[in-house]
Amino acid sequence: MEKWNNDLLKEIEAIASAAELHADGDSSEDGKRVPEEGLVLNEVRHYSTSSGVAICRMMYDPEGGPEDFILEKVNPAFCSLFGVTRQNAEGRTGRDFFVDGKALRGLGTLDRVLREGETASYLFYLEKFGRVFDILVFSPGGDTICMVCSDASKQASGERERRENQRFTESVFESVDVWITLLDGGGGIVFWNATAERLSGISADEALSGRLSFWDRLLPDSRYRKFILEKVEACRKGSVPEVRIETGIRTADGTDLYLEWTVRLWHFKDTGTEGLLLLGRDVTEIRRLEGELRESERRYAAAFRETWVPMFIVDPETWTVTDCNDAALAFYGYSREEMVGKKNTLFNMQPPEELSINLEKAKTGQEGRFVFPHRLKNGEIRTVEVFASPIPFRGTHCIFSIVHDITEKQRLEEQLRLLSFDSSLVAKTLAGILESSPNYLYVFDREGKLRFAGERGAALFHRTPEEMTGLSWRQLGVPEDRAGLFTEHLEQVFSTGKGTTGKISLPAANGDISMEFALNATCRDDGSVDKVFCLMRNVQ
Image 1 (cartoon, rainbow, N blue to C red):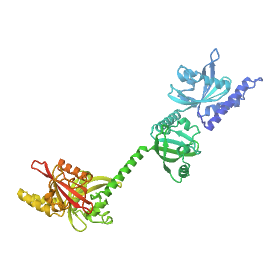
Image 2 (tube, helix red, strand yellow; image 1 turned 90 degrees about the vertical axis):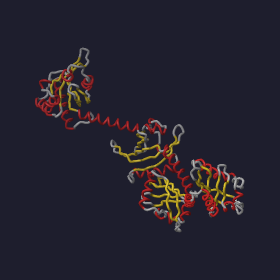
Image 3 (cartoon, one colour; image 1 turned 30 degrees about the vertical axis):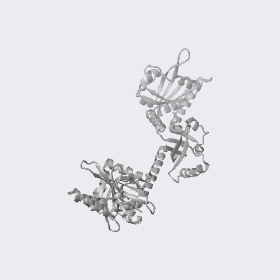
Image 4 (cartoon, one colour; image 1 turned 180 degrees about the vertical axis):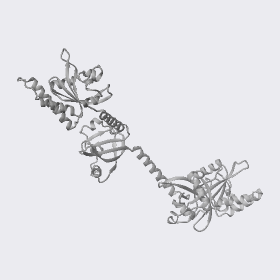
């Protein structure tokens, strides 16, 4: 029992003083006794105190050891506290009254109080009464002791709850995967959890020894330490609620870690002083992934900007073009200022209802290929094949679109379909179309050899269409390293039957010519690829 009510202490001291006077009077040489009014005062105080009081006499065994005690006098508060009458309490031994004849603990303490004149206090659980009692014991003199009792069940329950809460809090602090450190007002470490031990390689004993400087250990660079401590000082003064910093640390096994810290002001309730609470989170893996993401974004941005295929990004909610590459600007004929930030209805000719449905399909990934009529800035209508997919972009979900101009391809396919009723007429008409086309036209077989070349395509190599038949790129003087990509695309079309596009640089008299090409398969009746039709155009 750590604290007592002052009034109660005064009452107990008065009882003790009166008892001492009584004892001194009995043992004095001249046989003086305590005046009658002193005894009356003792009785009044004994009975008026609100705590249970019992005047007891110690009992000893033949060897002089404490054996038991007798309850000689109890006050009404004692009877009320234990639920007995004075007649049922006074005259009974402590063993009989408190523990029903079982072994009585604490007799040694009572004997020491009696012999050495000490005062003792303790919490004592009595199973018989099912409660915890707070007991103060002192000796008025002689072989008499005074026991002052009060019900401490609520106090004990509160203390038990407090300790449970403390154990729970400590277990949480020890189990979380966060470095937790508590610094006092002078910067000394007063708390160091298990994660702090693991990440730093410093034991709690060493950290709490007073020899470790937390800031010197965490921030070895003096200039950076000064910069951070200025921020921390602002937090300590209450200018900011918390400070977030990031530091690197090398563990005992040589591993470099990145830690993200949250620093907050901490109030020590027991001392009324202030310190700092530091919570450190290991963000090494997060920073590594962020670095990889930045590198991936850099590569994506480079590919997006530098490719010759038109690409743009659309916000599906507002239909706004949020970004596009230079190839898209060149294809549509707009400047970046004219295109970025404008709705895609600037060039997409679909009705708004259909456009909304298709954007939703692209956003959810239900469909990824679309064919639209797009209007260029000069008013020309082009048929485009758009491959669209959802991507995260600048904190929102957008649609990434790759555009292929298939106007010429569709025109030729339509003419071929119209002439499909007569194969001979088809061949003649096709030849006329190919020869009159402003583009460079070729037909390749599986071996990569030309089976047909248009007038412009043959003239590029200073040959006639007839002279081109049966020749390969190598025989036409195209270096193998330039023709490699084209050959890969050609093999892909023969393998899958699906069209593709690409770019190749062809030698010419006045220097190399950069050409875009589109490859499309012509199939037999059984569906297998017979030949591949190649359409090229100069992109210089």
